[in-house]
Image 1 (cartoon, rainbow, N blue to C red):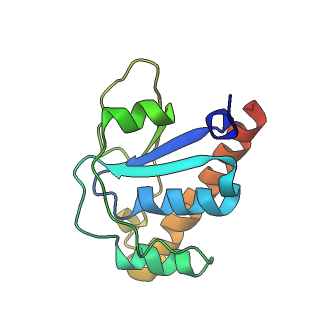
Image 2 (image 1 turned 60 degrees about the vertical axis):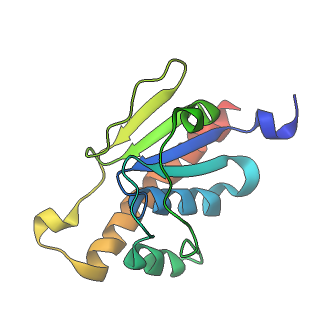
Image 3 (image 1 turned 180 degrees about the vertical axis):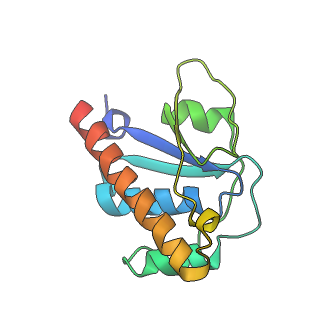
Length: 141
């Protein structure tokens, strides 16, 4: 088995693949480097990454501004083996042999928190979850 095949993999999914899933992918790359294969996709991808998502990640040295939203495929799900759905809006199909986790992420907008402050809270919630997932994936290997 080659090193790439031995690496754990994760596919982060949200609806538009422009915010939360892109943030999670960028944060996992920051935390795990090349130790984990990271991809992201959307169930109904938008046209671009959310500028505010990119801005609050840039604060941590993570650049997602050049990423392009892409459509979720069953092939992507099978390659990753683990799909993490951010939020409850995106619905992914059940695929044999693929584990799916749903992260009910913080939504500060429901508490009247908007703009940059909202996005920083979303980022911090996702970052904490990504760190825990990184630990689980690398401890299992």
